Length: 179
Image 1 (cartoon, rainbow, N blue to C red):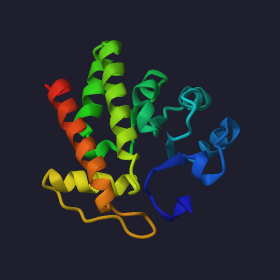
Image 2: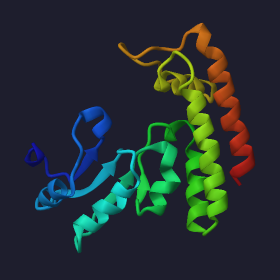
Image 3: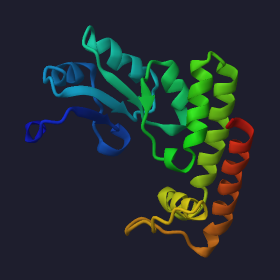
Image 4: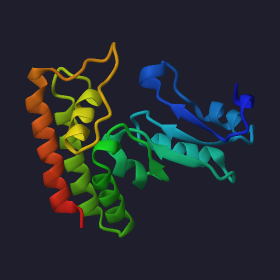
């Protein structure tokens, strides 16, 4: 499958959904293919991020943090960056957290991460799917990208309070942390 393209390949480690966890020996074996350039790690233990760096040895690899709720923790553990499902609805907050980390202001980085986490917990607190809630927020920001497709649950009237609350939280956090 990897040879079907000339593009580089990033492994996606998400054991909670795939049922399989990337192991150091499996990663080392996959790195024998020059097209493998890194891993997006969505396993919950942040120590996995440093494991991939150490397993690669002298080979330069890119390691992305997956769980949005631990973006700063992942960066501290050696992630080169992140790929997340909630970045699209609050990119400025992730950029502000990262900038604080890179400036050496860990207290601010963790404060912003805490605010991001509160927003995420709100985004998932209704009946609607996380992505449906985010799409509704983006619509309110002037970007109408439709809704989710079945079997994902769209936003219903009972979810509007969640959308309103999360959107207000995002706007307040932007006002506080984005310069």
